[in-house]
Length: 78
Image (cartoon, rainbow, N blue to C red; front, side):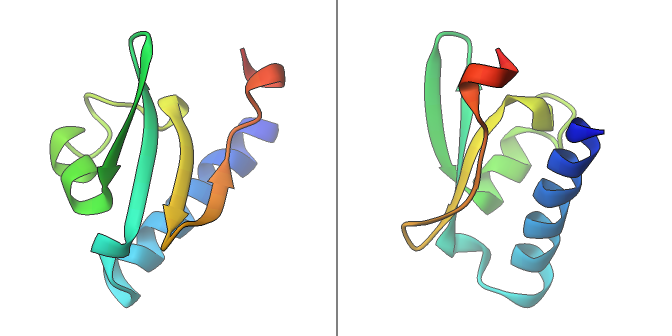
């Protein structure tokens, strides 16, 4: 149940960013092997091949203009 809520939150943020906001204002932080990478939303979507290469479960944080919109609780999830 928790994972569906998390996935729904991410999908909702992405949908709003892509279709009714400025996508370049959004930064996606995700786990890439042993490091955390940050990409602007349009670049993340392209690089992840629309979540085919980078699943949403690897997203750690989504920010818009330095405001955190989503943050994964690493202590519980890992």
